[in-house]
Image (tube, rainbow, N blue to C red):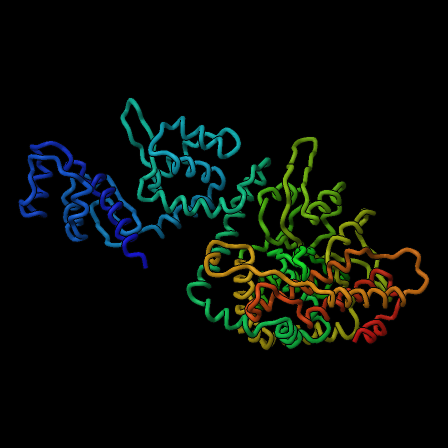
Length: 583
């Protein structure tokens, strides 16, 4: 511990305290306040007929004498002090401890309530010692990106939160932020500045930015609690956790058929950090982040896998397995609304859960902007009444939608002929209600109602969630973990590429004389992204900064690749034979 640094900071706070509550000690004699302090605190040992140096006084006193001095201040009913080491409430209540945690919570509450306008005004206040309201307004407007007039907000900072004071004179009024709280306010604002503060072009995005701040604070609070209370436990679990562990857990809960859907959903949560995959020569091959789509008939468990397993469902006793605060449920949201609010998420990696994706394509012109969103490209959207963007989308989707499923193949119920461009940009899996799947769904429902599944999930789900949260924080360089952990990359070798090539050749050979393939090269990329995301579960088992692709993860990825190619080709080859040959 840096004792000298602590003492230095305490000295600075003592100086601030004395100057705020006892400016009298620098005044000339005769001085009643100075005489009282000299008599009651210093035993008459200091000269009252000379000016006292505040820094010298601060150095020579201890905390007890400091408290005694402050209690003698005639200003104790008017001022407060909230430092890192000392606190003084109005009325002279002196506390030998800081109140920065209190200030930190206050600032975050203001940001949650007022969003970017609060950020702009607080930022402007931290940049000046004191300034007239007109100067603050001009600077806050510059930070905000357009003209604002924050008179009500600054009054609230003064009256409700004690973060701004009116200073100066009646003739030359000005505003200031108390000096002792500036460092912690700057610290909170820097957490937001670590990611872009976007320029927002719609009222919907303005409101959504408040949601963004709440979501990120939920994640930060969860991660902070994890580090404080469960870090060692999470790392120990991480040394046992693996794709095989997750598969065993999910198969035990749901059976050997339907577990794959939940596996994909949890794998996608690991992929959201978008870690790099590199070759043995150090070349970046791709990033692991992918969009997920489960499609098929209603009632086959799609929503359970994409929503309930990830964000939890208290009504049926399912705890959350996904990232806290970083999954935006879009129930009831229109695609136009999504495009309008999307700019509030600029530079952020979160997941949008859309459980009725069909409905988004009832509106004309939605394929192109959504295609850009899934490519994480630059979105511009314009109507007769407003324009959104341009902004760069950097987040992901997990969606489900209904299709008509036949004995062989399926047909999309979305009328837009370009919808296949959307499917091509997602990792897709068909839900067909076979007899085996029906039995597993029925058994899974029975076990859930009896509490058997719930008890097992209650034990394991929090551990998976903690592991996922910590990995995401490390891989995205979150300030809470950046000093103690370093990110890792996934290693792609010739072996994995050869596995994909072998599966590809078997598929093409089994399809016979087909002139036009019904799937693209992106399918192979999705399979490798899936294997890489699953391999990230081995983070704490691997001592190197390169994580090899896990054998079990690669088998799951090959199975996905073959099954998806089979579905896309309208089941024109024997799935069983290809999987058998691939072992």
